[in-house]
Length: 404
Image 1 (cartoon, rainbow, N blue to C red):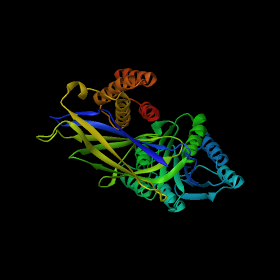
Image 2 (tube, helix red, strand yellow):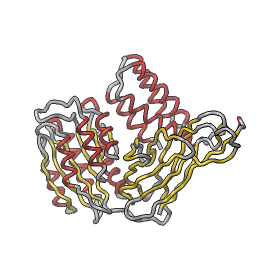
Image 3 (cartoon, helix red, strand yellow):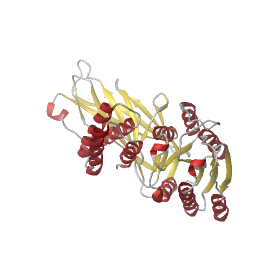
Image 4 (cartoon, rainbow, N blue to C red):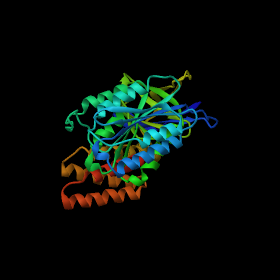
């Protein structure tokens, strides 16, 4: 069903020193795969008082577009959330019923994001062989029952991670200007939920953005894949992320085991793994050694697939300097995603400037001149004003998440 290809940024390893290497695992669906899982999608729409007017109208239009793009095997649940959560639709595929429920949405109250997550868990119970996605759409900050903005959202992030471990993906959407909501929180919540954060500042384009997310989940072939990464010969795993099809930092759910979540049937899934490799032991000769062993454990009763990453120890300086540019460019893409996130959580102008310069350099190296130009212009603005707006930092976060 899938093939595994494991490549490294440098094939050769010096025998006398510790070195860092980047492996890329590419999980590719076989050409004849057309299977995709039925999809249950639940949309929790913020209907607090700030959503009144154009934002609510554009959100309604986007939800109707979702209804019109459901397949016969898919279903939609819909709730409005503010002071409380009100279920308007429960796993329905009836278009007339769904559109009527959407049109009845009204904006009032505060923004209880925690209640929306509880609703996801209730409306999307565990179910084998079904892709389950919760989409949280908001234009403001999470609040308590009195409408006071939460200073500490840790408990909500923990709830998101708990829900993710039951197989539910959580996407988040920031609607309107990022000045009005907490982009790092929404991004963190989507990452804990193995989903994607969407910045929808252009309300006219929101319908396309939401429909694209639906289409991507309609290509899910595996809903709960895991990876076991076992270091060999005293190597040490120092980090990992999913780079494609959507960037996602990954965390161990137990030692040497990572929850990947979904795998699609129409594109490769690329995992980057950073490894610290020790020098050769005394008396060892040049030659190939195993560095990491990887096992893909699909759900749905598919057989696990294994592959091994190796390096060639050498005393040749020329061989040590050989670089696989494609993998090295993926390293820069990883660094760009880290930098754009850090832009959103720092208030230090000096660090902000350093991050923007690093982003400009990395974007230039991987052939992304528009992103490099945006980073350069943003740096110029920083020099003039001493700080960046939430819109500027969130836009760069979005743009780096989109690089291929």
